[in-house]
Image: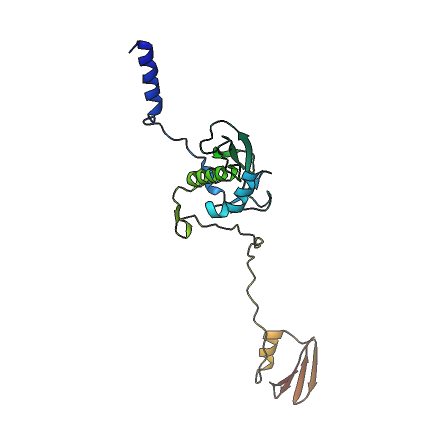
Length: 224
């Protein structure tokens, strides 16, 4: 074998061997905070993603960007190169990009799907994209018999209005109570001198703004 042919063969072998020790690109940690996703796009892949986002991933579908934590935008194009199982060798190339509310790209991925007799392959490509998104965002979740298991719980933000700071209240003032049998001195100690004092001999009346105290023989006999 010539040196040229040997070099070409060696390159082919090396290209077919997976790279050893090559570390997978780290996923943006902010993706872990995303729960509600708005799917953007006017194509078959976006439609398929909207139908199945909540089934194939731990994300829930938002109806609009206002209530979404992030936007997942799908783009789609057709190609006639590389299809394996299609007689006309057409396939769909689907790309998706997850963007935060601040406009930062948190994640992106592309996938292809071979066209069938009645479909363009965009649906299967969209499912592949969502599968990659799910594994990158929630690697601990697994697909089980009853669907995804191990998805983190969604914590809804507290929308209750803030409570005003508690204001220390002054100690309650005990009501001034006049009891039967109290003396003139007892009443004046509690209520102070009366506004009007009526001395009728055995009966004395102490008249206050909102109360009249009647005394008999120097002791309270009635309060009105």
